[in-house]
Structure formats: C-alpha cells, structure tokens
Image 1 (cartoon, rainbow, N blue to C red):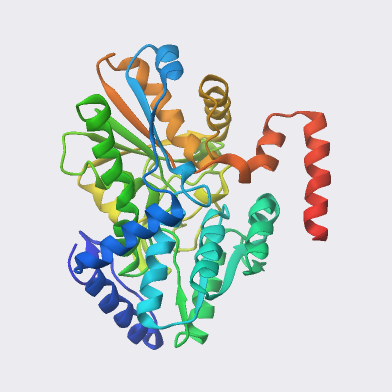
Image 2: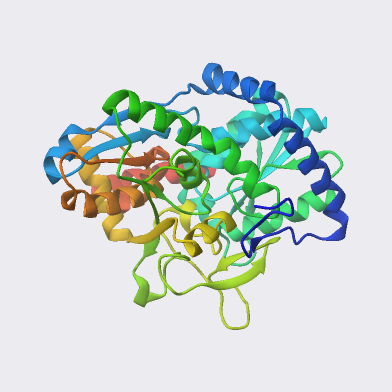
Length: 409
C-alpha cells in the first residue's frame, strides 16, 4: 500500500472536494496514532478491560471427530462485547474521535452488529450517534435496531435504492458532507476511501495477532488454513493479518445466495460476476452491469449482501495470496445447524459462510493438520431469519408476533 491508499490498482480516495480536508485530518490523526506505541497500548487496555479481549480460540472436538480430518479450532469473536468483531474497529475509531475533538458519530449498518457496536461506543465516550440502516435490514434485524435505540442512537431507515447496506452507506456519506466539522463517520468495514481500509484493518488485526499466539500456545504449530466470511472484509482481514507472512493458506468465503446461475448472490471475488469500478469513494470489484450501475445482491446474511469488497482483498486475490469461495444460503443454514448440534455454538449467519467451506475441506486434510475458523459474531440477531429457515410453524408464529411488538416499540 502506498500513502495514497492504493493496493496495486485498487483503493484510492475518490471524494468530493468539500470532504478532502476532513479526510486529510482523519489520515493525519490516524497515522500519528498508528506510529505511537502508547496509542496501541491504550487501545489494547480498552479492549481488554471493556470489550473482554482476548477472545478464546476454542478447539472443536466433536466437529473434528465428525469430519475425521483436520483439527478444527474456532476464534470466538462472538464473545467480544456487543457479540461480534465490530467492537474492535469502533472502539479504536472512538479513540481517534476523541483526538479530533468531535462530538458526534454516524455509521451505516447491514446486519446491525456494527450499528450496535457504534451505539455502544458512543454511549461509552459520550458522543451523539446516528445510525443509517436499509429499511429491508431494519425489518430482518429488529433485535439490533431495538438495542441501538435503547443505547441512545437515532436509527434512520433508508428507503432509497434497494434499501440495504449500500444505500445506508450513501446516506451516511450525505450526512457527513453536511456535518463534517462536528461529525466523524465510523465506517464499519475495510472499504471506502483511504484511509478507511487501512484503518479498519489495523484495528481488526487484533484478531489475527491473538489467534496466532493462541494456536502456537495450544497446539505448538501454525494452522494449514484459516477461514473467514467476507462481506466488506473487516473480520477476514483481521484474522488474515496474523498469518500473512506465514505459510498458511488464507480462505475468504462470500455470500453465494441462491447460487451463481440465479444471479441472486453477493460473490464479488469467488465467481467471475464482478468487474472493476469506482463507487462510494474507492476502486475495487463491484457487482455492476455493463453501464456501471450497481446490481441487486442477495444473502441470507444481512451483513454480506454488499456490492463491493475491500480493495485490500481485491489486491490479495489478484496476487494469489487469498483464495475465495462462496457458500449458498442452504449450505449456510446446514452448517449453522450442525455447529449448534455438535458444539453448542451458534455462529452468526455471516460467520456460518466460513464454516461451510471449512467443513467441505476439513475431511480432505490430514488429522495432524489444523484449521481455524473465525466465528465473527453470534446469531442472536438472526433469530427471525433462522426461525423462518428452519420452517417451524410454532416458531414462525411466535417470532412474527415478537416482530410486531418491536415495531410498536
């Protein structure tokens, strides 16, 4: 990466002139903090004493026995405060907001985990907070909407476009342009204009740093492969960071939705359906038509149905450092069910995409080999979607009744 934020041909900062000074300030503050060992210590202490890090690396004996191949370890980001890896990034950005002396934060969210994490950070630091969320995601992630509001955030349903994550990002940028002197945009994933991809990856690298130390302590050697789901790319880059310089295969798993032939998916790098373009302030692979118009995406997991992907991951694909696969909705539900029944763990639907690919490959690996799966979040937020997927009539009626209660609140 160079200082202009390019990773090979990907990245950059394509922002309106009115935001250039804001981005310059953010970059200056971030690089000052990154170069200051005391800042990382402050951040690490905050994550340990407030967010509950380090998260465990859990051996999965029952899944290992079930597949009869590689030893399966699971990095438990679901035990991080707010239930996902998102707190790693937002708490770090919160410290930067303090350095910039701003008093308001805004964010976008799809699955709602980033929104909850941002609202939590705002409460912790005393910031005003507004969360933009596609109207479709507001409906399917009602529990997280409830918690964001209870934490004091204003949740704004976005009714424009396809009413999902990309539209929430657009609205957040509009807000930022109007209030840039007092407001910081807490972008939730490793996308967007420079320095966001580098900055989010920096804070999420705590996942991989921990995982590498933990597997060496527990098993005495490095894994053969590590797996993470890929929406924008924050949890994947966080895990991959710890093993980037090792002879470890890095596997990112995207949302295959209803399959490639259906056109209803969000696989930008695993399948040849995306093309290089510039949107939302950066250059990467997007799911777009020949005219550069963004296509509709689909995933059973609200956090993965984004049209673009981190420019860092696009570069890592082009250089061959990361292999990308896709998991369909049906495969995800099956992997979630198996993980619950075998290990008593309930990965978020996003995380379950990584489990799908790991389960496909674990039986083909030797029993002396090790793999790590990043459980980037827990599935509390997905209860409505999972209940529908399991097609239980009693649960469907119960969940729908609860959803109506949430709407009234």
